[in-house]
Image (cartoon, rainbow, N blue to C red; front, side, top):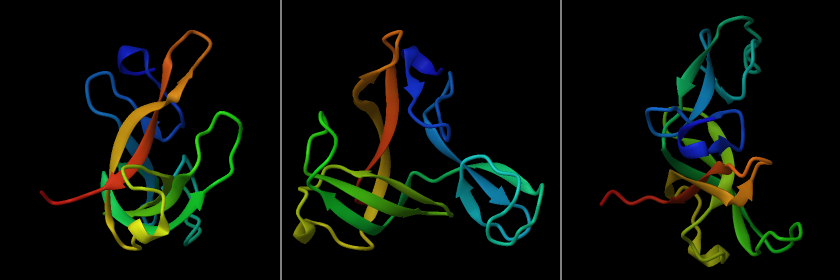
Length: 141
């Protein structure tokens, strides 16, 4: 558990006690492929026991998206499900926020940044909020 009783919604979202949240990837020491989630073998080149952790970038580009109009009860729709190629390696799926969920407003290759927020008010059995990550459009300003 990290700061202020926040819990990570997923194992590769790290919440240090004395710093900002970040996504952690695993990098192959042989071919430098980047993956989410703990692993001992590289899925690209098959090298074993050469994986090491890496803090992933907070910026990237939109690779693919889908506007979701139907979901589980309690999940507001429409929302944008996105796949993002992070700067420096790694591909991550998450929701794109800060954009009207209309395909005309979303461009492949658009720059995005990672933001952290509570996971739509979800709490564990002890009342701790879950922290999740989202993407939003990124401008250099």
